Length: 527
Ligand SMILES: CC(=O)SCCNC(=O)CCNC(=O)[C@H](O)C(C)(C)COP(=O)(O)OP(=O)(O)OC[C@H]1O[C@@H](n2cnc3c(N)ncnc32)[C@H](O)[C@@H]1OP(=O)(O)O
Ligand SMILES: CC(=O)C(=O)O
Image 1: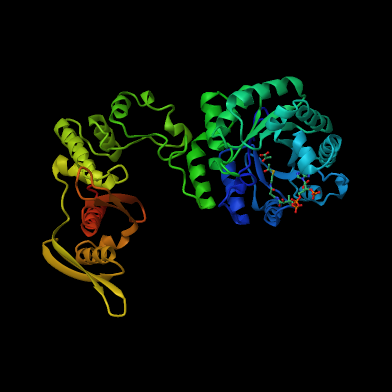
Image 2: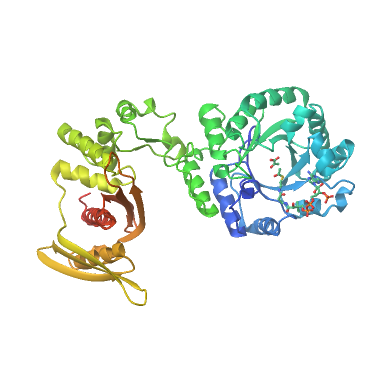
């Protein structure tokens, strides 16, 4: 359990689910809640029971034993009672009790314009709605947090009213008054000033909930903490309505590694990257490669000058040790590489280049020349490793190709039939193989594997899992070239290879050839 001194409150399953494009099933929600518990957040807001049938079911299944949180507690979200309705008669407030959540977050209006124009009630009735609902839930033994919607916008119009809402909530027994930047229009300086002022005037613990419409949600959250908020709300990967919410991983990263707030249980910080990616999978969204702290590129270095300093000390170009948040440093070898980049990349790949400055220099030059011609090694580690090993000691060739041929036959009925023939030498024999495929590259892939299967039965385990083609516009009067990236898997590991040529079939063949060659050398333990 976290201490109560500082709350990390996650709303991935409530506000995060308001992101366009996300639709969780109940099973998804249970899985996300378990993942959030693995990073040790103190509060997991599960949804709005009574408003969404799925959320009602989620709380019922959680209460029936399908969810047991080790670090945090489950929170139900709902609104204050309706205007003019007795709290005990409000079915949505009843649904909050029925959810069996021990903590409830109530959204309350704290901007006079919203009270008058959206709720269409009086300022006094809105205060009574807050008071009645908090007191009712407290009397039923629930812990209550109050999300003050549009607090910052409301403060600009009437700095007194929001504080009155907070005071009413506190006197009715609420634990936290959460200042919400609902429209997400704030900047950190304004958040800091307002939180500081409210902290002096309101008699309740303050929380912060920010949206990312100015791109400042995380900064606004940290500014609020600096000004005295001790409860932060955010969502996994910043998912949320419109531009999203404060990314909880960045907020936690900032709090723990920059501001000295030890807000997670021991051992949880290193789970950040894994949990971020696992939640992206469940949300059916690609993980953001460039996300701070947890993105695959968050500690990836492309510039040669960065690498040369990192070689001396990784701290010189990293804002923190990536392993603290479960991430890794990566060196990218591209046209921007220098000798240090190749040395560090070689070490990362387990290739010893000590005492071979000649090889390092040649590889730098070859990569620069090839990238100028349209190649790209930053996503094709396997092709880079082959290039490096070929320069170092001439990595062995498990097979040599004599020729290949591809035919595309458009039949009278409109059917397209692709057929490829590959002639090669492997394990002392000359082999000729012909295969059909659903396209020319598929036919080539099948013919190549067929030709090699007797010599290398392990090829049966390898499969082409991704194929990307990009036309690179010609430069300085040269023709356009095609770049092909192929991802291959042997069900234990994936590797990516690249091929570039003016002809798409040859570009594909080069990438395919590297893919199979790398796979065979890997299975032989040579790479
Ligand atoms: C800032 C935020 O993101 S808060 C979270 C927002 N999340 C969601 O809206 C997702 C779930 N929402 C829903 O399922 C639906 O919108 C519901 C069930 C909440 C409401 O559905 P309906 O009652 O059909 O919606 P409708 O738009 O007609 O009315 C909303 C009512 O809530 C009232 N209301 C709005 N905010 C509050 C509040 N903080 N406290 C009390 N009542 C409120 C409105 O005045 C309106 O009252 P009325 O019925 O007397 O006119
Ligand atoms: C409560 C909430 O989600 C908001 O005000 O943005």
